[in-house]
Image 1: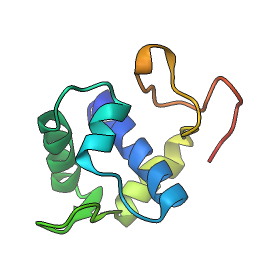
Image 2 (image 1 turned 30 degrees about the vertical axis):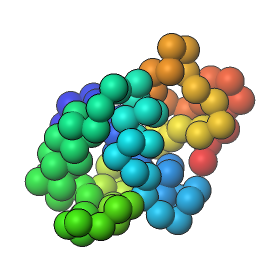
Image 3 (image 1 turned 135 degrees about the vertical axis):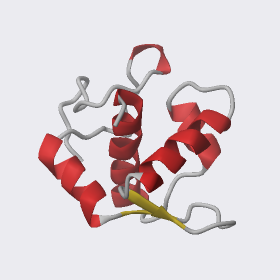
Length: 103
């Protein structure tokens, strides 16, 4: 798994826990400072192929972490604070440095 895939997985886990539904591709692209959604689609495909997430075709926000995906998130014990952006709008896979909040 690449660092960006790992960061995406951590973001998905935190978003799902906070919102009880998955983020849109556009929301995820904006979160990572990407201009379009194709890179997010590629990341999601890699995570799904690795067995870390499950998606329903043709349904918006239909993403769920599998047991393996949850295990990865727990093992690394990294999370994001959705209330604080990192410098430059870039997301880093680590707890929020602004408040130390672990979600």
